[in-house]
Length: 220
Image 1 (cartoon, rainbow, N blue to C red):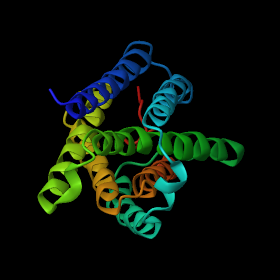
Image 2: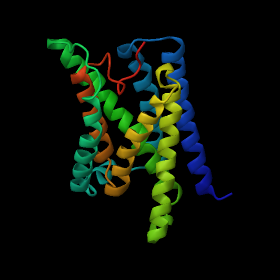
Image 3: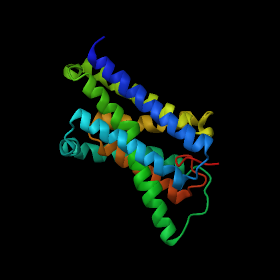
Image 4: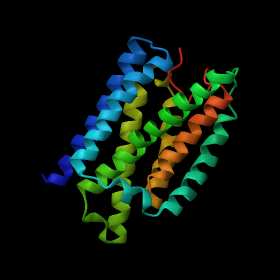
């Protein structure tokens, strides 16, 4: 089997399995409250992302600068499409003062940015790294985009399946929402699209009330 296929399979399945283990243990079994749950999530997924960054020898400045205008435009479009759903959900009391600042930073900025990197940016980069010669034609680019989207959806579904609250039809909401972010990255070829949109979605969910909005698991 071609080495590119192995790269794609190992990183995709490994990332999905790791997310499933994290959510299943720390949310499904231990029922850690969100503020504590995020500690192992940030540390473990952060280590995974750093490991891929070192293994793939990525140039972060090039990734961020390339097509940055299109990245911002895609982030704005994806944010509008997904945030609308948040304000159709039931609200819960919003904290005040320093507690609100904490939730915006911890649940919104850090949680949201890491989700964007893990669920959208990582699988797209894995796919591009695995099949560097596939994008030479229009058909090849379409195939590359489909493979990237499949990888992203696999990781998204595996990760959310570990949360008891997503072991039902809600998991389709996670797949659709993150699919929008991933498509934004695929079309813009700039990670700002996925990370920015995911971050803003989480901030909006905090503003609506973190105890009810499904975009901020876990809930018990």
